[in-house]
Length: 269
Image 1 (cartoon, one colour):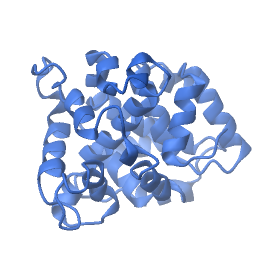
Image 2 (cartoon, helix red, strand yellow; image 1 turned 90 degrees about the horizontal axis):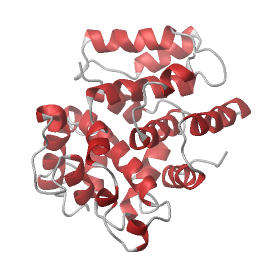
Image 3 (cartoon, helix red, strand yellow; image 1 turned 30 degrees about the horizontal axis):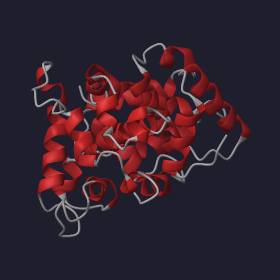
């Protein structure tokens, strides 16, 4: 079971009122579009096991992300422009923001995971470490094992859970809110089993500690926080308090958190 398409559709349709504008900001010049110290292609290369030129020993774990990266960085997918012409990230974003045809629809899951993974990498790069100061690729400063977990099926499930948990920050989700969220998940690329998992998560009581206990490392922690930012509008004190609690529980330093807020255009908490 892969929940990448669920994440992609929630981002594409806008899980909250500001989700889409935050996504646009994230892939624009103030976010990943202004990536330095390692291009998106280099980031994706590391995610795909290409940092040292060796194949990923875990086999097919990252095949979906690999295929999406190849498709969007090498072929015409959005607006008649190639991935190279759009600077890489723009081509990936086209699947989520362009509302294109079947090719784009089929790739929204991989694109969503690639963008969330790149946000996590970029945020961790900008912590004042040596790699950042010398303009080295962010990939070089992160353990390969952590990079591999960014696109794992287990991480996809954690991100869905993170987005739904964030939506519960200002109280339990009402039936009307549940229906609204479920309405954003179409049939394209989503199985009945995956849709039922979303329903189950929506119906569960909020469990932040349960979510935190499943986060394996700091790289996924940054990805979980990024997904949470894109899932809510942060216009209530309860949501601001939740994000503060989430960052603390994930052991994310203030600089990483601030960078994620800047890249997504989210207000500080």
